[in-house]
Image (cartoon, rainbow, N blue to C red; front, side, top):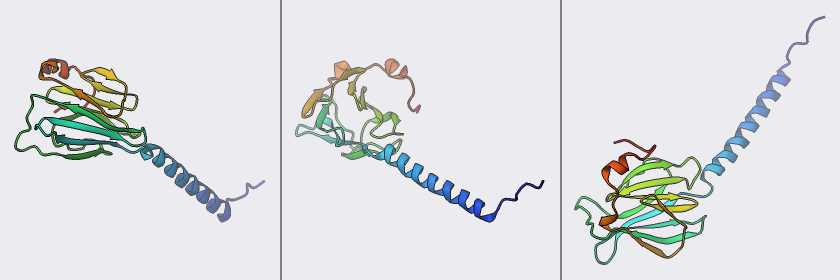
Length: 162
């Protein structure tokens, strides 16, 4: 007995089903990855010239969360501005991105600002390895005496090595 040969109709039907599955799966995954949007961080100074971060994330309902760095000054080469952490290794006006996991936004972002570690994760705000629950319209002050040593910051797992 001869096995039936593949007809061109079955080949085309298989291709169409695979293409439809690919488009649906890609669209669903892309929406899952970016649907909640990135962290929005404003790097600026207050009226006294103290550098500060203002953190917001609309989908999580977070806004006006300020982290201040009294006793610090911006170098003349630094500027102020806003950063949306939508892509890895986003350049920042001051501080350094030491870790970001943005596969599913808002993701996890850690910054080293003036020797302080500021971590933004959906469940909490981490300041120098201490977690604080998210509270809107809150100001956190990180004094120069609370800085982490260079050795302590170097021991952090993961992140970018410079």
